[in-house]
Length: 280
Ligand code: FES
Image (cartoon, rainbow, N blue to C red):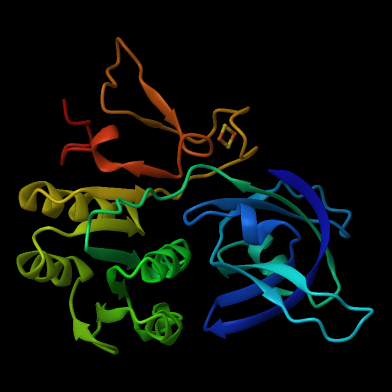
């Protein structure tokens, strides 16, 4: 993990309200793992912006353009404009300065003996799944991406997954792309076909809870990548904690999303019951 003062290489809108930013990031190709994230700070503005966490979508190397411009490693982030910080980010252009702390956190574990892998993404939750799909495909595994969103605008980068050889299935609430309904219905059917599959999910909490219930019934191993508010990203502020499996009021058991996560095995977390409590 290091703190880089670096520059934006590219930043553009890829769907209504969603942007893709490429940032110069030496060292990321060999150090970033699927599921990790970065903390980003916009440097050149005098506003005291906190760093903000963003999942890593992809890392790579731009080819050398001439002798003076050698190969350059980059990291790509995909983000949704949801407030003033991300609105400011969306206005950045090539050459603008940013500060990048990372790669951070603990990513996905890949079980080499598992043949079938189901990746479940909800909206922007697709971001940490791309590097995972890349890694699994490289290993020769069977990878299926199940992607859900409210409308077609929430379904991003599907062709990039397909280029990796990943089979993709899309569900939207309004039926504007793929089948109409919830992505969890697709997961249920896929697990009937591939009962030995490992499942990896990232998306809204309600989707993760539904995915977890389906995986419990099917006996499928599940890893979830949690989205949490983070101030420091390195385990110092404790602003990102979530209850662990042994959590009780008398015996608190919290896990730090930025340091122990953002990816957790589902069985290590306390899951909320319908009355808002946590399962015992
Ligand atoms: Fe500060 Fe996790 S964000 S401890």
